[in-house]
Length: 505
Image 1: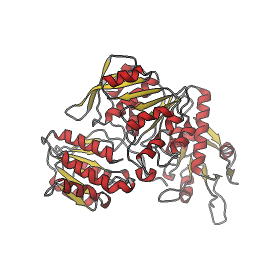
Image 2: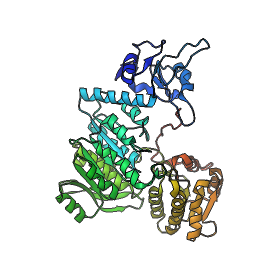
Image 3: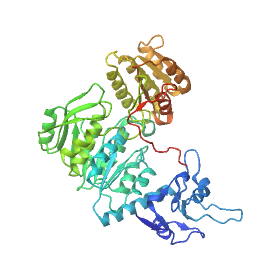
Image 4: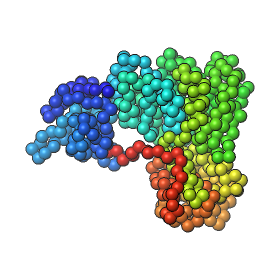
């Protein structure tokens, strides 16, 4: 347990104490919360502005639940007489969280060795984090993000769960603007930096995919020469980031052996997947070659989709860089299932219908990957395939073109039925029709309820349904709804875990 006094928190954050907060009040950093509903006795509640509400409105509720102090941006009265709530008042509560997180890590590093692993990329961060955590946990005390905590709030909340005996700290790093990953890196000072891919997610905010590459590369720029950058060789923009790092490089790749040999001769470590394929259940299988070795290790993953090969390689390369042996790495990869909700999460209903709920994140690249997996599972028509697709958010000026292209891909892959949900995704339906969809092969719905009615009425035993959209489009809830059909009795649900809350004030 790592504790700060209220006075120390104020000193670290350039804050001031309200008259009602005892400077000696002790706060366990593991009990710092940003949602008043998570407050427990002894906790500190961070009052910050949210997308839909202001955390200062919930201070009373947090204190009633047992919080002993508040980190706030303004003084709030607790009664009509103007008595202030017990608080540390700071200029910016989120930045103050970052300062506290940096101090937590300073204490841990002063106490004992800890390895901090930063992971970024346009897709795959959470799956890679889960895989790496699964490998490292048996080797030493490991802390990894809950769900997809990867921003200015989520990263400190992850750090606050670490203690002086923590051996491995895994940090997801997302970005919606330039400098964000640099800021997160300055907070946690990663020893290893993993970059998975550069895609068009958030292109509307960054302006171009090249700008996204600049932002993701901030992670490798932050590494000290004693650290190591772990880069996806198969993504040209990620591979180019090697020029931006003073740390040594390890590439991971499914490129052919000749490319690996040439790169290795150039002085770079190379971790490679060979003989990559998927089995009848759509799960990736390959031979894994570690740097400096020619011995193949058989990876037979329980994840769903060929695109997970990149995530499996990234987790293996990070674990290898930390000194974990090949046998331990491979044995862990071969038993791990999806550990976070709505990431190619498969549910096999008792009536023979299979649901793949991949509706936490979506961009053009991940849409295509998910559709290819659906087509493979369909077995060239052996099973009827349904793609229930919603809007991909934050694509900027290319949004209509990108949605149109996804609809055309669904037709080219011979997906049996395409159900497009929401006005923002309508171009998928238009693209499918223009590509040659006829009759009711492609249908458009204004809302998820209308799509549900068709699914409820027309799904048959043996059908496979992919549900995919950006998180903000909400189709994950439709996926949950059709996973448990009324009147069909018990179901067998695989790869489902509890997700993090997304309604924090």
